[in-house]
Length: 358
Image 1 (cartoon, rainbow, N blue to C red):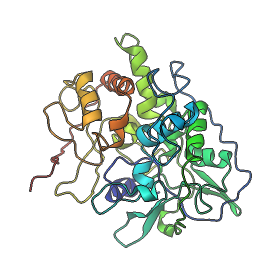
Image 2 (tube, rainbow, N blue to C red; image 1 turned 180 degrees about the vertical axis):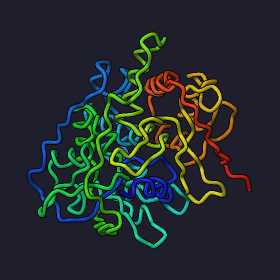
Image 3 (cartoon, rainbow, N blue to C red; image 1 turned 30 degrees about the horizontal axis):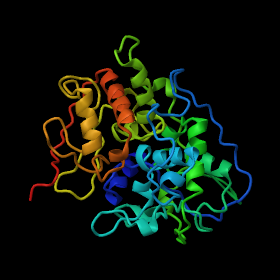
Image 4 (tube, rainbow, N blue to C red; image 1 turned 90 degrees about the vertical axis):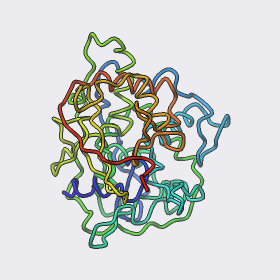
């Protein structure tokens, strides 16, 4: 599999965290597909709605959807998950020369989202309600692609390249996958017939789902246990913190399971120095052991670390990033979960600074 190469190259096409991604192009089957109902797994403490009680129930961001107060609670929840927790837009919306998302092409797919040195390209798919997007897909087919990494076609099931972290999203709750599909159905159609990805991106089988039993649990005596459990879902099942802050390998598990959240994944996005994801564990020497939960919330919402330095892309933090739209309660839940992570010693040599030094 091309997991290690692709996970590094995916950031060349974005300035925000990788989340949803792509597959090759075939005519949609339009019918059938698997039911897309894998076990939600995880601990008994996982909230039924997938986030904290403070998560929005109506009037979400409305990016490309119905918007504002016109959104139903289900659609608003999906809007929030797509645009702020899973950050799907970062991979499925083209960028303007300024680096800002081209909202006239919201979720319409990105051509040559990942480009190999030989010129081979992987393209992210059109998720809008156009015939070239998801309009002719059933809800079950969309869920199967998101959760299982399988795209049903007339000629058979096609496994998706694991640049799309479906192996993480496999554990999204039934309620939240329903919300995501409900929101995607509101996204205005944009005609964009994304070409097939290069054969070099084809994989023989879908990556293994991330076993929820391997995702670290907060200790029973952790002071903010309930909050940390909610954050665990947002950081490692419905969101992609675990995907970017864990080194990738060449196996069907994609992630190095003994190094979850320990950082060290490189993102060559064309900066003078290649950013490397930070060690988020509680190790006091190489991780975030000295950070407070408030420091982590500040980093998520403002894009500034505990010493006032800007966080390098592709971290989608700050007012202009996907995580800048997190509900404060959810940001605190994620922070408490990160504070609960057991220490892993992994020194990360990240020389990137933001904004870049001239």
